[in-house]
Image 1 (cartoon, rainbow over the protein chains, first blue to last red):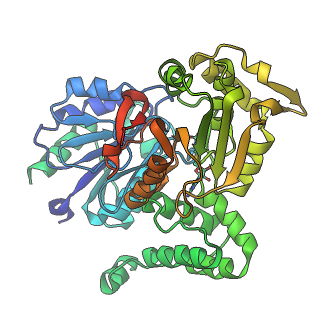
Image 2: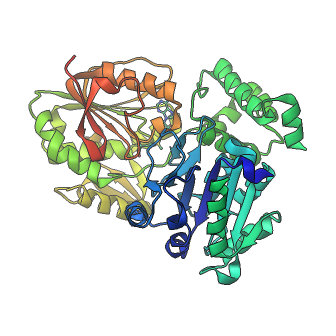
Image 3: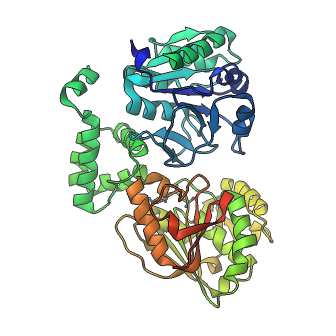
Length: 190
Length: 282
Ligand SMILES: C[S@@+](CC[C@H](N)C(=O)[O-])C[C@H]1O[C@@H](n2cnc3c(N)ncnc32)[C@H](O)[C@@H]1O
């Protein structure tokens, strides 16, 4: 099973992100053995996400700098106004390229580069949001043999993003929010 | 199917194509992108391929080897031109408050804006130096590899709809005048005052292939090295070190760091949170 080979988790969230992530990230234990890379669409001002989630989480939370090596047991939030990508040597690459689908950071860009780099070892999670970012990325994660989880749109704060992801990526598994947390925790226990 | 093919053959086909295309670009035109950070180059090449209408990167390579016009178009994908005046106002505020007092002690100054794009960063420096009474004794070098960007920098003309953001940044950076003092509007554009670039040398210079050309007191290279891989970053930082005078300053982008560089020891952190470094004494 692909699950046994999981090497990294990528998460994308937009409208309603903070609340949805609050159901997931605090569940991850301090010894969580995978890196978790997160793109949240936020206004350009400093996000405050790191401070917010550091306070709530056992796992380490960072806003990475360019070329930072990706290490397990760490949540990386894409810095506001930068795209965050994964290099093949498993380090973070930031870029100032134009926004994609009006977003920088872009979920698609993170998912695409992480899929190239981790292949079947990647788990991609698309959460609540009112746009279509993440759909193309989810399809690329699946095409590379990785696993895609989508928050059940019925219970999502904003349904468009998980819906779009499901449409573009039929292989995606739809799960309620609390089950996603369970899934990721179990992944780390294997 | 792709995946099976890749398994059988080893390296993914697309990675081989990227390698060959960048090699071709270098051998034929001396644009050297071979050591740019691969993840974003890959993405931009994928974009270029679809938007320029080629079925594969190999087809794109074939075209660029024979048609220089394709190279010009490709350059716009390979070099990212996103910029803003007084981008990250805290950086310029720190220069104003902490670096300028040191710069005042020099009878004449040289400042190098490396990877100046369309000139937004250059004009930010020129205006700041003017406000601090230092512009008259300063020579600025503005360099980039993208000829179209250098032309825009030289003209100092920007779309009016960008001015509101520039103005807000300028104020937040501690600006001592009104940005509108520095430009005139014409035909829906803002034209920045010629006097700001009286002593600017615009020049085509690549951090990948070219050498140091002057001794400077300040080098600002922001959001350029994020596009380089680590060995190439080291080359560029080596150039900056060799260009800086004793105790000269190096400013990077807000998410860039010398932490992973082999030249980290040549510098001390001067304003840590704004990524302003100072050259150590020997
Ligand atoms: C994202 S822009 C940064 C603009 C500006 N420094 C800023 O921070 O707003 C990157 C610039 O680096 C330039 N560049 C890319 N490779 C370069 C190289 N090898 N040498 C010099 N400039 C380069 C690009 O042409 C582009 O203008």
